[in-house]
Image (tube, rainbow, N blue to C red; front, side, top):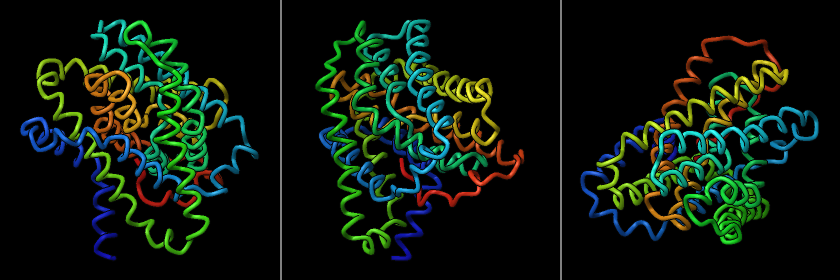
Amino acid sequence: MKLLEAISTIAGKYFAVWVILTSTFAFMVPGPFLGLGNYITILLGVVMFGMGLTLKAVDFKIIFTKPLPVIIGVCAQFVIMPFVAFAIAKLMNLPAELAAGLVLLGSVPGGTSSNVMVYLAKGNVPLSIAMTSISTLLAPIITPLLLLLLADQWMPVDAVAMFMSIVQVIIVPIILGLVVKKFFPVAVKKSLAVLPLISVAAIITIVAAVVSGNAATIAGSGLLIFTSVMLHNGFGLLLGYFTGKVLGQDEVNRRAIAIEVGMQNSGLGVALATAHFGPLAALPSVLAAAWHNISGPILATYWAKKPVINRDEKTAVPPVGVKL
Protein backbone atom coordinates (compact mmCIF):
# COMPACT_ATOMS: atom_id res chain seq x y z
CA MET A 1 0.00 0.00 0.00
CA LYS A 2 2.87 2.36 0.84
CA LEU A 3 4.36 1.72 -2.60
CA LEU A 4 1.06 2.66 -4.24
CA GLU A 5 0.89 5.81 -2.12
CA ALA A 6 4.42 6.77 -3.19
CA ILE A 7 3.58 6.18 -6.86
CA SER A 8 0.35 8.15 -6.42
CA THR A 9 2.24 11.10 -4.94
CA ILE A 10 4.69 11.13 -7.84
CA ALA A 11 1.80 10.84 -10.34
CA GLY A 12 0.05 13.86 -8.88
CA LYS A 13 3.17 15.96 -8.42
CA TYR A 14 4.35 15.54 -12.01
CA PHE A 15 0.93 15.45 -13.67
CA ALA A 16 1.82 17.98 -16.36
CA VAL A 17 4.92 15.94 -17.28
CA TRP A 18 2.84 12.77 -17.72
CA VAL A 19 0.32 14.63 -19.88
CA ILE A 20 3.05 16.04 -22.12
CA LEU A 21 4.85 12.70 -22.45
CA THR A 22 1.61 10.84 -23.15
CA SER A 23 0.50 13.43 -25.70
CA THR A 24 3.84 13.27 -27.50
CA PHE A 25 3.86 9.47 -27.63
CA ALA A 26 0.22 9.24 -28.75
CA PHE A 27 0.96 11.81 -31.46
CA MET A 28 4.02 9.96 -32.75
CA VAL A 29 2.59 6.43 -32.37
CA PRO A 30 -1.22 6.79 -32.48
CA GLY A 31 -2.09 3.19 -33.32
CA PRO A 32 -2.17 1.62 -29.83
CA PHE A 33 -4.44 4.36 -28.46
CA LEU A 34 -7.08 4.64 -31.19
CA GLY A 35 -9.55 2.33 -29.43
CA LEU A 36 -9.53 4.29 -26.17
CA GLY A 37 -11.99 6.93 -27.38
CA ASN A 38 -14.93 4.69 -26.45
CA TYR A 39 -13.97 4.91 -22.76
CA ILE A 40 -13.66 8.69 -22.33
CA THR A 41 -17.01 9.14 -20.57
CA ILE A 42 -16.37 6.21 -18.21
CA LEU A 43 -12.91 7.50 -17.35
CA LEU A 44 -14.19 10.96 -16.52
CA GLY A 45 -16.89 9.36 -14.38
CA VAL A 46 -14.12 7.62 -12.42
CA VAL A 47 -12.41 10.98 -11.80
CA MET A 48 -15.65 12.60 -10.61
CA PHE A 49 -16.41 9.59 -8.40
CA GLY A 50 -13.09 10.30 -6.71
CA MET A 51 -14.16 13.91 -6.20
CA GLY A 52 -17.31 12.64 -4.47
CA LEU A 53 -15.20 10.51 -2.15
CA THR A 54 -13.22 13.56 -0.99
CA LEU A 55 -16.05 16.11 -0.55
CA LYS A 56 -16.87 17.06 3.04
CA ALA A 57 -19.62 19.14 4.63
CA VAL A 58 -16.99 21.63 5.82
CA ASP A 59 -16.14 22.34 2.16
CA PHE A 60 -19.48 24.18 1.88
CA LYS A 61 -19.27 26.07 5.18
CA ILE A 62 -17.91 29.22 3.56
CA ILE A 63 -20.99 29.42 1.31
CA PHE A 64 -23.13 30.11 4.36
CA THR A 65 -20.66 32.08 6.45
CA LYS A 66 -19.07 34.27 3.74
CA PRO A 67 -21.09 33.85 0.53
CA LEU A 68 -19.98 37.03 -1.30
CA PRO A 69 -16.54 35.82 -2.51
CA VAL A 70 -18.11 32.51 -3.60
CA ILE A 71 -20.79 34.34 -5.60
CA ILE A 72 -18.20 36.66 -7.15
CA GLY A 73 -15.93 33.75 -8.04
CA VAL A 74 -18.58 31.48 -9.56
CA CYS A 75 -20.09 34.35 -11.56
CA ALA A 76 -16.63 35.32 -12.81
CA GLN A 77 -16.02 31.68 -13.77
CA PHE A 78 -19.10 31.47 -15.96
CA VAL A 79 -18.82 34.97 -17.44
CA ILE A 80 -15.11 35.57 -18.06
CA MET A 81 -14.06 32.21 -19.48
CA PRO A 82 -16.84 31.55 -22.03
CA PHE A 83 -16.88 35.13 -23.34
CA VAL A 84 -13.08 35.33 -23.54
CA ALA A 85 -13.15 32.02 -25.45
CA PHE A 86 -15.77 33.43 -27.80
CA ALA A 87 -13.70 36.59 -28.41
CA ILE A 88 -10.50 34.60 -29.08
CA ALA A 89 -12.32 32.26 -31.47
CA LYS A 90 -13.65 35.25 -33.40
CA LEU A 91 -10.42 37.25 -33.45
CA MET A 92 -8.29 34.25 -34.45
CA ASN A 93 -10.90 33.09 -36.95
CA LEU A 94 -10.73 29.51 -35.69
CA PRO A 95 -12.33 26.72 -37.74
CA ALA A 96 -15.86 25.85 -36.62
CA GLU A 97 -15.07 22.74 -34.56
CA LEU A 98 -12.09 24.33 -32.84
CA ALA A 99 -14.08 27.50 -32.08
CA ALA A 100 -16.90 25.48 -30.57
CA GLY A 101 -14.36 23.41 -28.62
CA LEU A 102 -12.69 26.51 -27.18
CA VAL A 103 -16.05 27.96 -26.11
CA LEU A 104 -16.88 24.59 -24.57
CA LEU A 105 -13.61 24.67 -22.64
CA GLY A 106 -14.56 28.11 -21.35
CA SER A 107 -18.05 26.98 -20.35
CA VAL A 108 -17.17 23.98 -18.18
CA PRO A 109 -16.68 24.35 -14.41
CA GLY A 110 -13.37 24.85 -12.65
CA GLY A 111 -10.83 22.05 -12.51
CA THR A 112 -10.29 20.54 -9.07
CA SER A 113 -6.50 20.51 -9.36
CA SER A 114 -6.87 24.26 -8.87
CA ASN A 115 -7.51 23.58 -5.16
CA VAL A 116 -3.92 22.42 -4.75
CA MET A 117 -2.60 25.39 -6.77
CA VAL A 118 -4.50 27.82 -4.54
CA TYR A 119 -3.02 26.19 -1.44
CA LEU A 120 0.50 26.49 -2.86
CA ALA A 121 -0.20 30.11 -3.83
CA LYS A 122 -1.22 30.96 -0.23
CA GLY A 123 -4.75 31.67 -1.39
CA ASN A 124 -8.11 30.98 0.25
CA VAL A 125 -8.39 27.19 0.00
CA PRO A 126 -11.98 26.88 1.34
CA LEU A 127 -13.09 29.46 -1.22
CA SER A 128 -11.34 27.51 -3.98
CA ILE A 129 -12.98 24.22 -2.97
CA ALA A 130 -16.40 25.88 -2.67
CA MET A 131 -16.04 27.48 -6.11
CA THR A 132 -15.06 24.16 -7.69
CA SER A 133 -17.93 22.33 -6.02
CA ILE A 134 -20.62 24.92 -6.77
CA SER A 135 -19.55 25.49 -10.39
CA THR A 136 -19.49 21.70 -10.91
CA LEU A 137 -23.00 21.29 -9.48
CA LEU A 138 -24.28 24.20 -11.62
CA ALA A 139 -22.65 22.87 -14.80
CA PRO A 140 -25.60 20.72 -16.02
CA ILE A 141 -27.68 23.89 -16.38
CA ILE A 142 -25.18 26.66 -17.12
CA THR A 143 -22.77 24.89 -19.50
CA PRO A 144 -25.45 23.88 -22.09
CA LEU A 145 -27.04 27.35 -21.92
CA LEU A 146 -23.69 29.08 -22.51
CA LEU A 147 -22.96 26.82 -25.47
CA LEU A 148 -26.42 27.43 -26.89
CA LEU A 149 -25.77 31.18 -26.61
CA LEU A 150 -22.17 31.34 -27.83
CA ALA A 151 -21.28 28.21 -29.84
CA ASP A 152 -24.45 27.51 -31.79
CA GLN A 153 -23.24 29.64 -34.70
CA TRP A 154 -20.38 27.20 -35.30
CA MET A 155 -21.88 23.83 -34.33
CA PRO A 156 -25.44 22.68 -33.54
CA VAL A 157 -25.96 22.49 -29.78
CA ASP A 158 -28.41 20.04 -28.25
CA ALA A 159 -28.75 21.57 -24.80
CA VAL A 160 -30.97 18.79 -23.44
CA ALA A 161 -28.59 16.03 -24.55
CA MET A 162 -25.66 17.94 -23.12
CA PHE A 163 -27.51 18.39 -19.82
CA MET A 164 -28.02 14.64 -19.63
CA SER A 165 -24.36 13.99 -20.47
CA ILE A 166 -23.12 16.26 -17.69
CA VAL A 167 -25.50 14.68 -15.18
CA GLN A 168 -24.27 11.22 -16.17
CA VAL A 169 -20.54 11.95 -16.13
CA ILE A 170 -20.41 14.41 -13.21
CA ILE A 171 -23.45 14.52 -10.92
CA VAL A 172 -24.19 10.78 -10.74
CA PRO A 173 -20.55 9.75 -10.04
CA ILE A 174 -20.20 12.47 -7.39
CA ILE A 175 -23.39 11.31 -5.67
CA LEU A 176 -22.18 7.70 -5.81
CA GLY A 177 -18.89 8.81 -4.27
CA LEU A 178 -20.73 10.56 -1.44
CA VAL A 179 -22.90 7.48 -0.84
CA VAL A 180 -19.89 5.14 -0.75
CA LYS A 181 -18.11 7.50 1.64
CA LYS A 182 -21.19 7.56 3.89
CA PHE A 183 -21.50 3.77 4.18
CA PHE A 184 -17.85 2.73 3.91
CA PRO A 185 -15.88 5.55 5.60
CA VAL A 186 -12.98 3.38 6.77
CA ALA A 187 -12.33 1.86 3.36
CA VAL A 188 -12.59 5.28 1.70
CA LYS A 189 -10.16 6.84 4.17
CA LYS A 190 -7.60 4.14 3.41
CA SER A 191 -7.97 4.65 -0.34
CA LEU A 192 -7.68 8.45 -0.44
CA ALA A 193 -3.91 8.45 -0.85
CA VAL A 194 -4.23 6.39 -4.04
CA LEU A 195 -6.81 8.66 -5.68
CA PRO A 196 -4.26 10.91 -7.42
CA LEU A 197 -2.85 7.88 -9.25
CA ILE A 198 -6.32 6.85 -10.43
CA SER A 199 -7.18 10.40 -11.51
CA VAL A 200 -3.91 10.91 -13.37
CA ALA A 201 -4.21 7.54 -15.11
CA ALA A 202 -7.76 8.36 -16.22
CA ILE A 203 -6.90 11.82 -17.52
CA ILE A 204 -3.79 10.80 -19.45
CA THR A 205 -5.76 7.94 -21.02
CA ILE A 206 -8.37 10.47 -22.18
CA VAL A 207 -5.60 12.69 -23.54
CA ALA A 208 -4.00 9.77 -25.39
CA ALA A 209 -7.33 8.83 -26.96
CA VAL A 210 -8.02 12.30 -28.33
CA VAL A 211 -4.46 13.07 -29.47
CA SER A 212 -4.09 9.75 -31.28
CA GLY A 213 -7.38 10.27 -33.08
CA ASN A 214 -6.39 13.77 -34.24
CA ALA A 215 -2.67 13.42 -34.91
CA ALA A 216 -2.90 14.74 -38.46
CA THR A 217 -4.94 17.80 -37.42
CA ILE A 218 -2.55 18.61 -34.60
CA ALA A 219 0.36 18.47 -37.03
CA GLY A 220 -1.37 21.01 -39.25
CA SER A 221 -2.86 23.46 -36.74
CA GLY A 222 -1.38 22.58 -33.36
CA LEU A 223 0.31 25.98 -32.92
CA LEU A 224 -2.96 27.82 -33.60
CA ILE A 225 -4.85 25.72 -31.06
CA PHE A 226 -2.14 25.95 -28.42
CA THR A 227 -1.90 29.73 -28.80
CA SER A 228 -5.65 30.10 -28.33
CA VAL A 229 -5.57 27.89 -25.21
CA MET A 230 -2.65 29.85 -23.71
CA LEU A 231 -4.39 33.18 -24.34
CA HIS A 232 -7.64 31.86 -22.90
CA ASN A 233 -5.93 30.66 -19.74
CA GLY A 234 -3.85 33.82 -19.37
CA PHE A 235 -6.81 36.16 -19.68
CA GLY A 236 -8.78 33.99 -17.26
CA LEU A 237 -6.08 34.23 -14.58
CA LEU A 238 -5.60 37.96 -15.12
CA LEU A 239 -9.27 38.95 -15.29
CA GLY A 240 -10.16 36.65 -12.41
CA TYR A 241 -7.61 38.41 -10.20
CA PHE A 242 -8.69 41.92 -11.16
CA THR A 243 -12.37 41.05 -10.80
CA GLY A 244 -11.67 40.18 -7.18
CA LYS A 245 -9.64 43.36 -6.77
CA VAL A 246 -12.28 45.65 -8.29
CA LEU A 247 -15.00 44.07 -6.14
CA GLY A 248 -13.08 44.65 -2.93
CA GLN A 249 -11.76 41.15 -2.18
CA ASP A 250 -8.55 40.79 -0.21
CA GLU A 251 -5.38 39.19 -1.56
CA VAL A 252 -6.03 35.60 -0.48
CA ASN A 253 -9.45 35.71 -2.14
CA ARG A 254 -8.09 37.33 -5.30
CA ARG A 255 -5.54 34.55 -5.70
CA ALA A 256 -8.18 31.87 -5.21
CA ILE A 257 -10.59 33.48 -7.67
CA ALA A 258 -7.87 34.00 -10.27
CA ILE A 259 -6.72 30.38 -10.22
CA GLU A 260 -10.25 29.00 -10.08
CA VAL A 261 -11.37 31.12 -13.02
CA GLY A 262 -8.28 30.39 -15.10
CA MET A 263 -8.17 26.59 -14.65
CA GLN A 264 -10.98 24.58 -16.25
CA ASN A 265 -12.21 21.00 -15.94
CA SER A 266 -10.50 19.99 -19.17
CA GLY A 267 -11.50 16.33 -18.74
CA LEU A 268 -15.17 17.29 -18.91
CA GLY A 269 -14.40 19.47 -21.91
CA VAL A 270 -12.85 16.51 -23.73
CA ALA A 271 -15.77 14.21 -22.93
CA LEU A 272 -18.48 16.70 -23.96
CA ALA A 273 -16.67 17.82 -27.11
CA THR A 274 -16.10 14.25 -28.25
CA ALA A 275 -19.71 13.28 -27.61
CA HIS A 276 -21.48 16.36 -28.99
CA PHE A 277 -19.17 18.22 -31.41
CA GLY A 278 -16.60 15.72 -32.66
CA PRO A 279 -13.01 14.74 -31.79
CA LEU A 280 -11.48 17.86 -33.34
CA ALA A 281 -13.44 20.06 -30.92
CA ALA A 282 -11.83 18.19 -28.02
CA LEU A 283 -8.33 19.42 -28.89
CA PRO A 284 -8.52 22.73 -26.98
CA SER A 285 -9.44 20.80 -23.82
CA VAL A 286 -6.69 18.24 -24.43
CA LEU A 287 -4.05 20.96 -24.71
CA ALA A 288 -5.56 22.74 -21.72
CA ALA A 289 -5.10 19.58 -19.64
CA ALA A 290 -1.36 20.01 -20.12
CA TRP A 291 -1.04 23.79 -20.19
CA HIS A 292 -3.21 24.55 -17.13
CA ASN A 293 -1.00 22.23 -15.10
CA ILE A 294 2.06 24.15 -16.24
CA SER A 295 0.79 27.72 -15.87
CA GLY A 296 -0.92 26.94 -12.55
CA PRO A 297 2.23 25.79 -10.74
CA ILE A 298 4.25 28.66 -12.23
CA LEU A 299 1.78 31.22 -10.88
CA ALA A 300 1.44 29.38 -7.56
CA THR A 301 5.23 29.36 -7.14
CA TYR A 302 5.40 33.10 -7.86
CA TRP A 303 2.66 33.91 -5.34
CA ALA A 304 4.12 31.52 -2.76
CA LYS A 305 7.13 33.82 -2.53
CA LYS A 306 4.90 36.83 -1.86
CA PRO A 307 3.60 36.71 1.72
CA VAL A 308 0.04 37.76 2.52
CA ILE A 309 -1.60 38.74 5.79
CA ASN A 310 -2.38 35.58 7.75
CA ARG A 311 -6.05 34.69 7.80
CA ASP A 312 -8.04 31.66 8.89
CA GLU A 313 -9.06 30.89 5.30
CA LYS A 314 -5.53 30.34 4.05
CA THR A 315 -4.44 28.17 6.94
CA ALA A 316 -6.79 25.38 5.95
CA VAL A 317 -5.44 21.86 5.55
CA PRO A 318 -4.52 21.25 1.90
CA PRO A 319 -6.83 19.05 -0.16
CA VAL A 320 -6.15 15.31 -0.07
CA GLY A 321 -4.23 14.31 -3.19
CA VAL A 322 -4.60 15.94 -6.56
CA LYS A 323 -8.00 15.68 -8.20
CA LEU A 324 -8.17 16.55 -11.87
